[in-house]
Image (cartoon, rainbow, N blue to C red; front, side, top):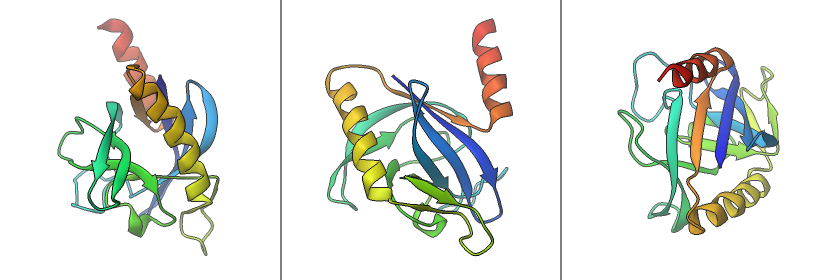
Length: 151
């Protein structure tokens, strides 16, 4: 299974994207801003291809979707949130998104979106399926795909 997070809007406060599972749209995403130099707790993970696992979160007191092998980052999760202030480098999912000047990059109905994608991803992982997260803006993903074909 391939999860694609396509980042479509970025600002100094947040990054919005769309969340696709095997090419089908499921929801929107919200992350911290993408930065060239990481600032702990307020920087989105680099674009790339990462394995997803199920991991127990002491903070959230439940099993969650973990993003593994992210260079320079640990403890990255996909989880419920509404604003970039809640991300700490993680990826939030929501049914709808708003990037107007008043909302400053927000997602809404996060619990509904998370519950749906968690069940799909957790089921695949429990059945032994490899689940990968491919994340980036359109140009990064195009370069990534071209690089994979030449390897």
